[in-house]
View (cartoon, rainbow, N blue to C red):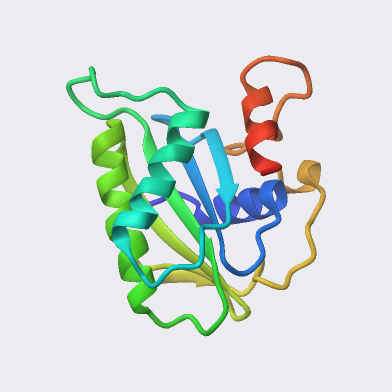
Length: 170
């Protein structure tokens, strides 16, 4: 369970500005701070967990090195999927959840929450936690306004934040 899912969702929404059919995969460190994230729009396919897993794995490989040599996972991957429709679970959600779990196993990460973002708000599936804002039609907020203690705004200088900006623009 995430300590503060609202802050995470707000921060990812501000960073990636997802529209329907956009996936945002985030990697959290051992203190649940954002270590890396990437957003992408998968190719339109039927709900296929294999395709989703491969897309997630490809983006994880771009933003964070694997942790396969560790005895136990230290970092956690979380998936936020912005979609049309209501908050109810769909077959596509099941495929994304399976894809996330398998991609985490293959990358040496702990499998974290699956969060949907719809017009009605956001929801952590399986936990019963959610909120009305942000939602899939929310205007983006300024990243500095969305920064919190657990999820600070990315650094502006070169270094670790550089790959995040590059991947978020794709």
